[in-house]
Length: 474
Image 1 (cartoon, helix red, strand yellow):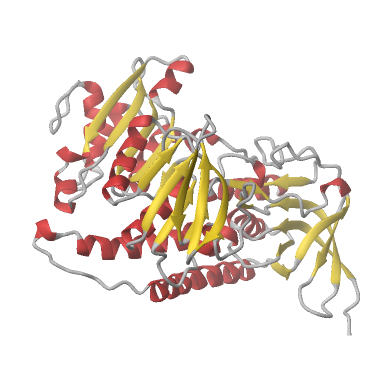
Image 2: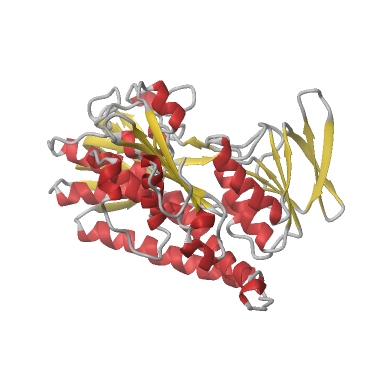
């Protein structure tokens, strides 16, 4: 028996239950709007199920084993046995707890949850196809719609994902055994995070990158610290080479690369992990039905209130463009819901932080020194090396630094770059400083707990003033 098509209505229809979508749904529910959230796979989207959370869970678990095995100078001698299947099972439990929590929060805030794949059928309607034999479809009429369909890994020519020989980050996070060898295509943040994980687990990792360095979105001295640590872990880098093709070879594969001069290199491995970026998922929505035209990259352009060119349709998260970060999508989801409810809400992207969970971590926010100069400021810079931090020494983690960029005239904090243990946590202080218009003096006057990694923030600020105590002043 096939269930016939039914028509329902809602004030706010949200397509996609990732960070942008579920936050928009919960906020809209808090604002007493009638909300329907459609999700075709799993609540929490890629971030909770196949990206941010599972990758950080594996990074944390891997670090426990690696730190125990590399702590001889602390007087600790250990050789941990890693059960990757058990590690992945624990990771899955973490994911299930969070996704279950998202579903409960949505229901508690009055959100109507619909499972299925949605596409536009007209200016104010979508059709939702339900999975399963005989489940049929339904039509939902809406007053406002929020597109939050997220992104997917980019495939490159001749390297289509097959889940066995050529894998994406999604499959990499679900492996039940550590591959003996791995070729990673791409040295961006996903490639570097996963390269580090598998190198620590004992895999022989080779990274090939078309550009001339790791983490091209970051300053050279920041990326250099991460690259140096990766090389200490045994990761082998090959720059200026693009992956061209692969073939099965023995028990694994051979990956061929080519440089600008046409020279071909070959790398043998058990698997190839392609991590060259992500692309927005907008091709499943039938945007022509509502007259929306995505950009060449597939993104939906929005204004500072998350509105597209169609007054009743909003876009949040990865589909709305760079930076493709979960916390940016969450904020956009909040703003979209508040604008629909008539609240005076708008987006401000100057304090969107970014973090890379490599070893050591990277945290950035605001402007770099060169960006501040280009913007017309006269920047002053302060730095604190982690090797001068007492807390970093007690952790055995002394690579990296904290750097602050401020306006020399008024002292306002303009940006910061941290490469250090727990950089993803420490960057929040600088984000708050920029958001509230704080000055170097405001941070310097704040007593920071000793001994902590956080006090390196104060030392970097004092260094900008030429009065740092625990490092040489410029």
